[in-house]
Length: 149
Image (tube, rainbow, N blue to C red; front, side, top):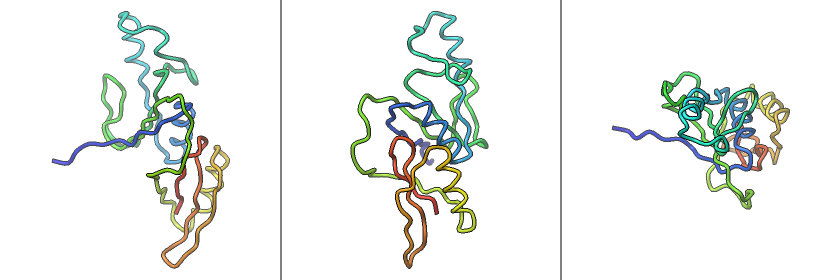
């Protein structure tokens, strides 16, 4: 049986990264607020483990996005399929990614997708055109490179 997976990013600001990637992929920011409220009410966690962001309770050091068509755990609010998780770390990104995502917009929508993502905080690194194809290399708000093809 195949294994489940998620891609995990280190982040300085996991909540803003989640917003960016939800926009980039047309994903949904996961909502763990019901679980967090239950745990706070039961005294199982301290207030300093969570924060309010855009009117919702989140884990202070983590946020995730999920594919809108995938199932969700009804207790935790976590996606059970394709998802990206952003964990707060103290250090900033210091080198080239060893792994990156390719966003497939298609040749007819690549330019518009690049412009849309730039409006949400991405930076155009370079445009590549070679015999094997054409794509744009961008960096997300924290400098993680990704391609739009």
